[in-house]
Amino acid sequence: MYKISEHKLLAPCIYGMKVYAPRVARAAQPGQFVIVRVGENGERIPLTICDYDREAGTITLVVQIIGASSRKICALKDGDSFTDFVGPLGHPSEFIYESEEKLRSTSRLFVAGGVGAAPVYPQVKWLQERGIQTDVIIGGKTKDYILLASEMRKLGARVHIATDDGSEGFNGLVTGLLEKLVEEGHHFDQVIAIGPMIMMKFVALTTKKYGIPTIASLNSLMVDGTGMCGACRVTVGGQTRFTCVDGPEFDAHQVDFDGAMRRSAMYREMEKKKDCQCMEKLSQESK
Image (cartoon, rainbow, N blue to C red; front, side, top):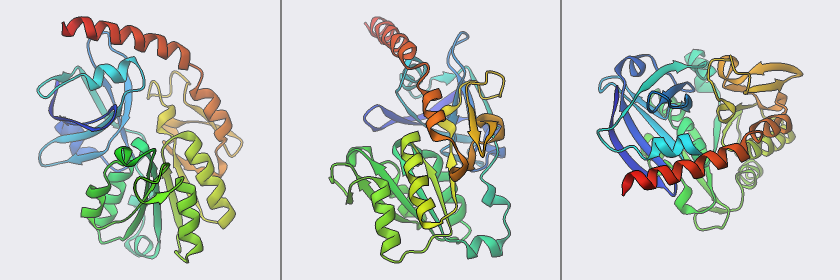
């Protein structure tokens, strides 16, 4: 069993938790994910690693309630445990294999939308700990949905905020702020976008206009996490790839985002029905 040592609300319906999993923590790298399960009959859920502490043996996860299984996970408390906790899985971020010279000569901008800030954090941390300056755009519907901004600032990253309603930072979408930064003269050799599929699509369209190479993390497509179910199939450069075993990071200018969005919506109605059943069950158990 993998005990939760810390569990807290980060934003409406979004929770952060630290899990004691020393073997996973020893091997984890930025960009990778784990598969968790709650209960013997629970669903296998892939979750991107937000942080890892090799000395403490903990993995930090950020989970948003979007269906029955994520609701069960978020209902766990301090001291509760995951039945299974497998990882790290997926390919690490490509830049961890670059030479120090290449790392220092590359200006990177991360664009994080919503819970996309969670997988962005370990990448920014890895770079900043090695003295590599990074810029980060964090977007949310309102200031209440801006995640991990203060934590990234503590690392030394230059953080730019965009909110749909203007309650904090730039008033508008992350793409608008991206364009603003570029038009003001900020130079970026690479953009790494993680967030809702529609956000990554328009980030890719924006960076393509400026000729900036861009990486997108398609972790939100994953279901089984092993390549066996085929649910995370995505077309990249005209070829079929599997997000969980070939990614989760791909060349954003080569990704068929429209096809990916159609695939991610396939089980939406079924998941809503299961979530309603889960809410009823949790309500009964709490009485």
